[in-house]
Image 1: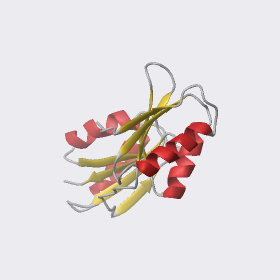
Image 2: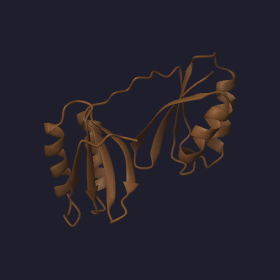
Image 3: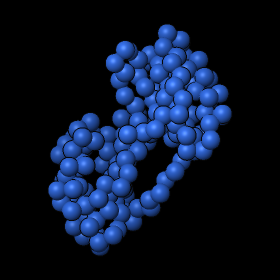
Image 4: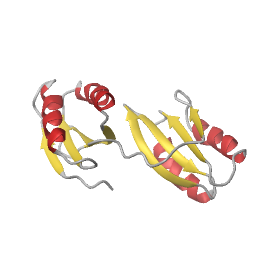
Length: 157
């Protein structure tokens, strides 16, 4: 999925050390390169998302690691390629609500227009790709914009 350029394992270290380590490593990366930070400190997630927002970097995804801790894929800079014609922020709605509402909104849009769907429903991430291809939509990009919050850029047609 993502190309990881550098891995930084900070398991066993308390906060804010994982964030400090990530900052130092990201500072050395070229724009667009990705750091995989592995941390088991419970405060790392909130710290990282706040830091990324402040610094113009991007958390591409988070994942539970097989040997413990959480992996944070941090990209230096933001490479947003898509501009949305319409935004649907449906945080708080449970599945299948986000996809149902996206379908309603997309039905009124023109071919080629892009919907930005913002959702914190845990199931939508695994469902949206299949739904998009089954309905003739194109999932252009998925971004984890906050802890458990995803932005999906969906093009009609």
